[in-house]
Amino acid sequence: MSMEPVEVVRAIVVSIPAGSVASYGEIGRLAGVGPRQAGRLVARLDEDVPWWRVVYADGTPATCHDGGARALLEAEGVPFRDGRVDIGKIRGDGIPGQE
Image (tube, rainbow, N blue to C red; front, top):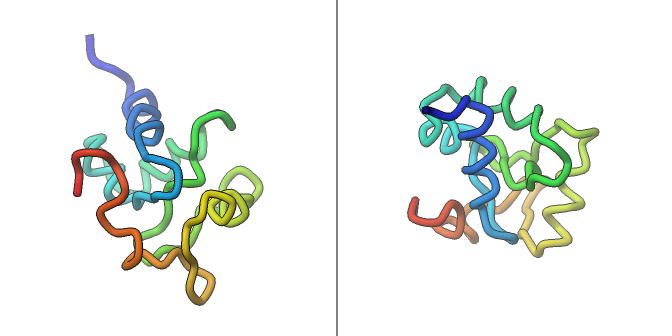
């Protein structure tokens, strides 16, 4: 039996280590959905799933879950530059096995 898309997205998001991020596009590619659908599915995740580790392709933090992503990312030591995650400093640290 195959998993529902939201369950696939949940499993992917849970695999992102603290201090790392993945883009909606990366999540979508792994889940077999587009980036926008990945965003909608991430927005549906429970608070105990690290949804804040999913960012837009340009490093802009998620705006779902009342916009608390930046503070949560900063607490994990994720570097920011000009209001966005400094992707260049953490590239390759995201989803295990997807470097």
